[in-house]
Amino acid sequence: MNSNIANTIYFSAALTLSLAGTAWAQSGGMASPKTIAENDKMLVTETYGKPGESTASVNRQGQLYYYVQGGTVELTYSDGIKATLTRKTGEARIVTDKRAYSAKNVGTTTLHVLTVTLK
Picture 1 (cartoon, rainbow, N blue to C red):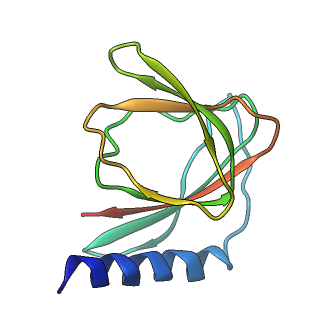
Picture 2 (picture 1 turned 60 degrees about the horizontal axis):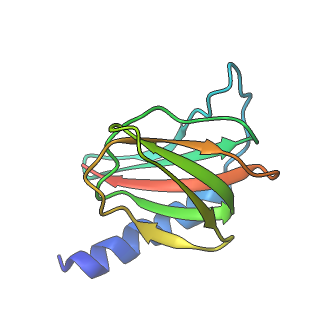
């Protein structure tokens, strides 16, 4: 299957499934992804990140992100380099960076992100 078509199908599935998703409790300052769909070809997760919460440092290359609610994030790469980025509501992006990084919500709003990972 053409990779553009496959990505469009996966993204559409993730967006549709997000409408049925609900928030879950956060604890310990870590934003935890919740699996909302999975099969042998992809994993779709949903993450709510409150201001001050972070994600684990992992390699995210090839993942598709859709920002249901945007905000400001600080990325900390495994080599210690930091970058602060603003993600807009409705923005979609595919991660091309090969370095592992953690993401911290340094803004004032709760981020709501859908992630599609091809297996």
